[in-house]
Amino acid sequence: MFDTALSAADLVFLAKGAGMTILVTAISVAIGTLLGILFGVIRVQLGATLSLPLTFFLDIFRSVPLLIQLVLANAFMGMVLRLQISGFTVACGVLSLYTAAYCAEIVRGGIDAVPATTRRAARSLGMSWMQDMRYIVAPLATRIALPSWIGLALGVMKDSALVYVVQVTELLKSTQILITRLQEPLFLLLICGAFYFLISFPLARFGGYLEKRWSHD
Amino acid sequence: MFGYTFQWNQALARLPKMLDGALVTMEVAVLSMLIGIALAILLTLLRLSGARPLRAIATGWVEIARNTPALFQIYMAHFGVASFGIHFSPFVSLLIGITFNNAGYLAENFRGALKAIPETQTRAGRSLGMSQLQAFRYIILPQMLRISFLPMTNQMVWAVLMTSLGVTVGMNADLYGVTQDLNALTFRTFELFAIAGVLFYAITKIITLGARVIAARLFRY
Image 1 (cartoon, helix red, strand yellow):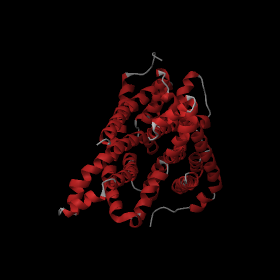
Image 2 (spheres, chains in turn green, brown):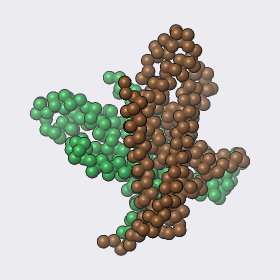
Image 3 (cartoon, each protein chain N blue to C red):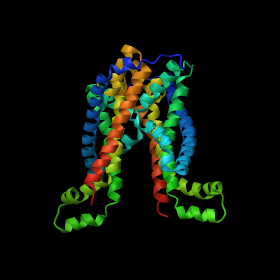
Image 4 (cartoon, one colour):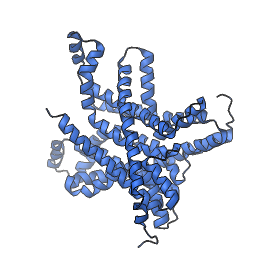
């Protein structure tokens, strides 16, 4: 196991894959979170019945395997619409909506957890809806939602391993390419797994810490 | 409207094959859940036990399962263990990968559920002459499973969605694998995968609704 054919160039190749994983995750989480906040607020404002179409739309992203979402989006863009769109764009688009679907739930939970009396008090003090949202709901809801949101962001990073299906070479795919060439699956997979673990584990711990700290006051 | 002619008939003609695939998908998911729950209970016991190495093994399992991609875990179960000369069939590799993942997440859910059960109950059981294991089996375990019923339902949905990853280790009997093979034959990519998506959606809805019915029957006081 210590006698490996892995060269420096291969390590650079792996690092590029890792960079791609982080890039896709960062873009998707950023866009997905903005959309998720928007969808979450809309769902709370419209109420359960009126927002049913939106709920159904978002539910699809949580009930169909990500692999199928990616293949479908790719086929729709390429075969049906005949657009020249890179796999990277498709991957980011699908993952963003996927993130947004989960994020909307988290945002809704956060807003619902702010006591109605607190919000009415804010409105009684003469705050507008926007001020109530900005100064009362946002700080309180963030405390409740942030630990789950960290979990979601890490989940998206792990799920980004599936974007290989639209020809994006991220970490796991580059590992697989090297495995095919070097025939050292265990060693290479351990490197790859360690990378995911080293990013995910501290952040997950941090999320757990925040959850614990903020739930006691 | 589009420069593309949808041919749903061609894809729909393959529906029986895809339904067979859906059955295999369900089979893998149910098996992985049953074994996963059993393993998760074992992991919970290990984490409760006083022995340090046992706790370390259980915690390591849970953290690796939760902090690496499911696809990585399936790769490990297929290509990783092949380095030791162990060769599993795609079905077994997929089952091992998903079960490993399920057990980790479920053990974490169980730990959360345990926090909601007062420790005094265990002590009450011990005072009544139960052994530590009996107290766990008859007092803690039923409550733990009840509290984590909803998370278990979510994990079941996850298990179904994760079966689609089996295709990466050569699994071609499950819903995704069947669809991929049919796609290679007919090139109706969009139609076939749209139908597969609808089937997956239906399966997850059946699971969540079924769980709701079961919960209403089981947990009425």
